[in-house]
Image (cartoon, rainbow, N blue to C red; front, side):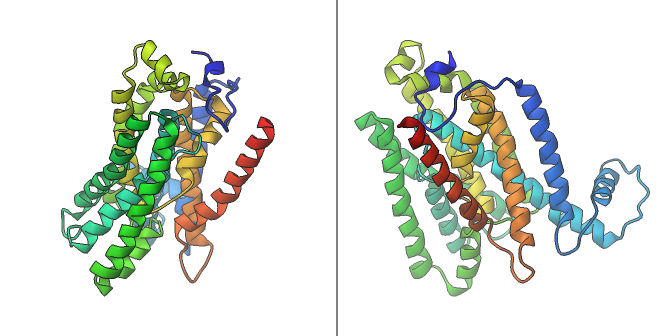
Length: 357
């Protein structure tokens, strides 16, 4: 399938990159490692990058003679490193979910938030928190399950409407509407059902952030990314077929309805696990796939791996800035991504409109 056939997806450059995919992935992987080292070393207690490498290598192999304090090692291994790894996994998951949602809906503006998945997942987590199900040893498993189930509700409504109307735009509009409904349900639950001592924790979670991230919480988005992300990359050729339209994809042997449901279930799981760990973080799933398409083209098997790496880099950098910008208070990561992402989104829309006219 040629790149010319993919030009039906608006708002993205589809010229094929002259740089091989392997080189892009290698360069972005090195950049991600560099950003992770910078993130682990930054904070109220600055730790040189050499110490970061030495401490991590000592923890893995035990071949380095320690010269650092136990407090510094604890800061890296128990706080900053799991936080950075969690941010990278969430950023990659949101980027892959956004790129897959844009492909399956054939709409450049689709992402887990516009489809209502994030609002539904947030409602599931809020309900579980208010009912006390997230407390205790099993709470870290209940939270992603509640987020996944909550995210399925708006997705099911959008699928039903799009099946009846049979236009990709119907799914987007239905997702926006159901997202608003679930946002209203979140507000109602917090104001009417939740107890006062629960409000501060839930509101802090809704703002988006990784302040409570530990190794256990990193397992959730990493598992979803490795399973669902890999499956979506493997299904890249089928995702590309959707760009020729429903009739064309069916003529080429793709069961479009069943495939669309499977992809949207994967998107729901990726977004749900991300929301369960980090709360509401916008614009990553919307913008990062467009950046990846500008780098390597629109083919899903090229776009999704690059989008995952770019999303990981972007969210680790945003989280590091959020906790380092002020000495008095830590900014929510969702605030940083919105402040940066909204102007970029407007610029992209303006450039797309100018090219179209």
